[in-house]
View 1 (cartoon, helix red, strand yellow):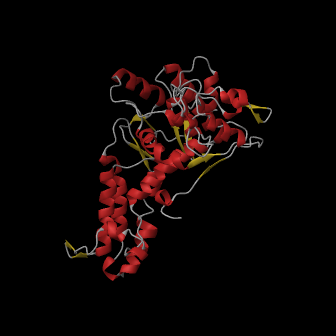
View 2: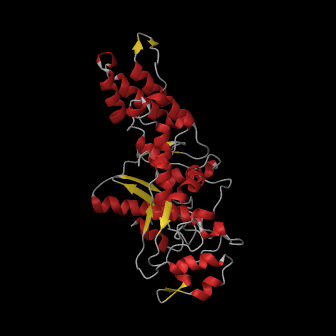
Amino acid sequence: MLNLTHQDPLYRGFNMDHRGPQINHLSFADDVIIFTSTDRYSMNLIMSILEDYEHTSDQLINKEKSHFMIPSNTSQSIIDRIQEVTGFSKKDSPITYLGCPLYIGRQRIIYYSQLVDKVSKKICGWQARILSFGGRITLIKHALLSMPIHIMAAVSPPSTTIKYIESIIAEFFWGRDQDRRKYHWASLDTMCLPYEEGGVGIRRLTDICTALQYKQWWNFRAKSSLWAQFLKSKYCQRANPVAKKIDTGQSLVWRYMMKNKGILEGHITWKINSGSSSFWWDDWLGRGALANHTRNISSLNNATIAHFLNNGKWNERKLRQQPWKSADTGRILELSATRSGISRYLSRCPSLFGGP
């Protein structure tokens, strides 16, 4: 029902680019986040839909547990209007949704205090004195290190928070003598080495966080999810994502993706199938993006491989008109272009994934 609100010409919802997905709500189980403007008509429309849901399902919305969040510079008259129409209470940033902090503005360490408390309370419930070192290692690997993964898969906590959690884990491993911590006979870097290299095989949270950042770029490039469509419509309206650069005002997640794409693109190879891949910016020839080997290729040049195909075969005339070396044309002509479908794969690299 909420998806139909955009059909109302008087409805003013979340300001999105018309070429991207028109999102007005996100839902998981019984938790729903609704995005809308402060226009009275739009809010009344939303509330009427929620009332229809109550009458149809015989379930009441708990307004005491329902809140709205707005920018800090919002005038009091707008706040009063929202409270009057919705009956919800105002809640300041940050809020926690599905275990992840949602906030407006810059990232702060205090937003992740719940994660630190969660790890600390878990350790306090264990009797470290009666645990062997082997038992502590097992708990660290399978309990403590898995607790932050849910948050890190969505957002990247500050490095200070990650280092503090790692220090808590190291202190649990070496133990405490009354109110004093025991001497740490090996650094955390040494402990995180494989058994064969003198470590105990613990994963560093910084490495896990980096790996999950890499996965975000891979999911963005390889999958057509709602999240990927939203980011493309917001940051890549005209230019190819590979050609984009970091700019001011961009989200933290997008800045990390821009930072890591240079590493990952060198390990992503695209196969020629339907020809939907970018001719200039996707590595389908096995030697990197062609734009990096050619002059005067604009980031706005989004020509696909299909543009250079004619009835499943290469259009040699178009290829020879491109500003590159003749040897590149020969390599392309030798490459088969008769397959169909869409395919892409990520070549594994020990330096990225920690294994062969």
